[in-house]
Structures are given as structure tokens and as C-alpha cells.
Image (cartoon, rainbow, N blue to C red; front, side, top):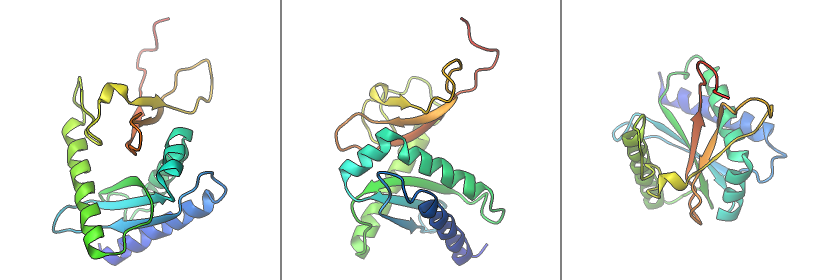
Length: 179
């Protein structure tokens, strides 16, 4: 598939997300799409919040999780790009405009993606592959729909100040819960 078509479809979904969450507080301020097929097959979708405080509020409140879930759902509906390798990250500040800043950010994202892939499906993780902090201290958060059943999905965030680590989690309670 043509890279310009993929980029157009990604921007279309981002536009729908920005419209859908226009009253979200805090809300994203900018976005970027980074792709370099010579370095990696993944398209990086970056959602920026104005500053680290707004980003941390977005992580804590679940705003980032809502955006992430919306984006994944919408991207999966577009047949032409449903199988395109993509990663969604949240950042604070302004999107980079200078080539050196873009290259640095891309390198940071590649490092983060590599760290995450090393810890995927591993037991007894001690260090987070995304941020390098103590994994056991990461907070599992969720939106509770029904207080009588356990949650089945949500997000994780690092408690370290100024860390914008964001991960998702899911659970499948096969066979029920012992009670």
C-alpha cells in the first residue's frame, strides 16, 4: 500500500479522535505521525498534551486510555490499514519541527518500542521496558462498569514524577474466580 494513503488514513482517524474528544479535559494539543521504513516497519502516532502536568492528568484520569482505545478501534475498522504496524505514544510539549529534534524523538521511540518488545509475554518483569523504572510500582487503573465483576481491561502508568509511561492491560478470567 502507498505510504501517502496510509498517512492520510491515519490522519483521518486522528481527526475523528480530536473531534470526538473535543470536550475532554485535559485534551490533546497536537499530534505527529513518524515513519521511516529504513529503520522500522512501525508507524508512530504521537499525541501531544500541552505540558507534562496535562499529560500526567490525562494518564491518571484515563483520558489517554480513552484516546488510545478509540484510536485502536477506529484504525481496526479501516480495512486498507487494519494490519499496518503502528504504535501510539503520548508526549508532552510541542511536536518537534526541527529535523534534529524529530530524529531524536524517533530514536527515543525506537528504543522504547525495543524495550517493550523485550518484556512482552515475559513473567516476573522487574524493570519496565517502556520507561526503565521499577515495573512492580506501576499502577494498574481501569474504569469500573460493574462493581460486582472484576475489570477486564485498563491502563498502567508509572508513578515516577515526570514519567509518561503508558501501557494497557487486559485480563481473561477463564473458569471464573474463586470466591
